[in-house]
Amino acid sequence: MFHLYSKKEQRSLPPVQTNESINDPNLYIPSEGLVNAVNVALALQQPLLLTGEPGTGKTRLAYHVAHIFGLKKPLIFNSQTTSTMKDLFYRYDALGHFQYSQNSKEELTNDAVEQRFIRYQGLGKAIKSQERCLVLIDEIDKAPRDLPNDVLAALEDLAFDVPEIGKRYEANPAMRPIIIMTSNSEKNLPDAFLRRVAYFHIPFPDKALLLEILKGKTKAFSAIDLEGVVKHFEMIRKGRKVKLKKNPATAELIYWTQLLHKLDFDTAKLKSFDKLDAVDKHKLGISYSVLAKNKEDLDALRKLLR
Image 1 (spheres, rainbow, N blue to C red):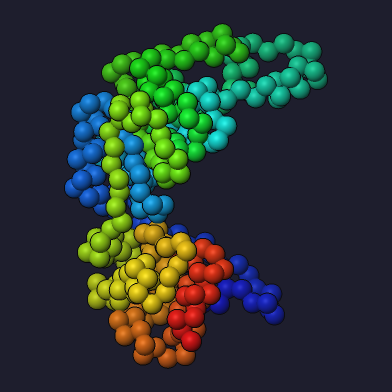
Image 2: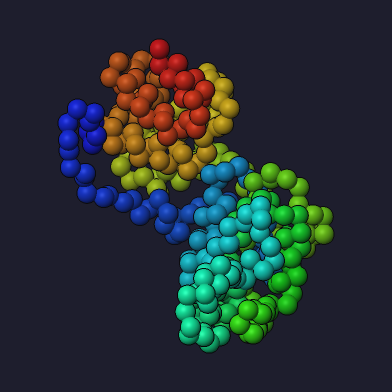
């Protein structure tokens, strides 16, 4: 079992170790339905709207599609409760520009203002680049109700003005960006918006798909060892022995599996959960910090071990 931190001893930090397979877009495994939804959106040149519980791969799909088509990494716009149509294209640091004007006698050119105080956002970057790009508009349901319709209007024009510097940018129609939007269904989206997008709901993976995902993302365990991991994970998610307020998703499963390896936990033992010894239960109790996201759920999981 690893020992990195101690409340009694001063220690050196270990070297950073990364697992590039976790976010490798080539290892993303879309279902047939999701592949069909992407193709429908591309054929009709419509945005693709994705729903599904957090951790099921909505955001990672954008990286996968960009990788498949040889595009650069997705240009990401993170929707906020205060987002406006202008924010889709750029943000202007008015305060910074004002402070500069007060403290400097040198008058800036429009190009200098653009370089210093204009920050182009996802859709603005795509249009300005004059390249084929993929734009990810993440969690669009968090934005004000008008923004989804503003997105569609922006895609029709594929142009925007920056009045602060007197410039206008227009995209080449042949370089129309691919748009993927995600929603956690926190609120209903406008009907007019929904009529003009391709839609797909990413369901939670079944046992076979979970095993396939883990085989690609975690190389440390054999297929037999991973079966025990998935069995225990499904027992938790399906509430067979414990009811959680927030169920862990695929992302938590991947990180949990990695942690079990670092803890030198024999995952084959998870097939006979009731036969774990005290050491195994201690390690498993530590690992539940990855699966639980609040005190009540962590207490409920650890209660299984008593």
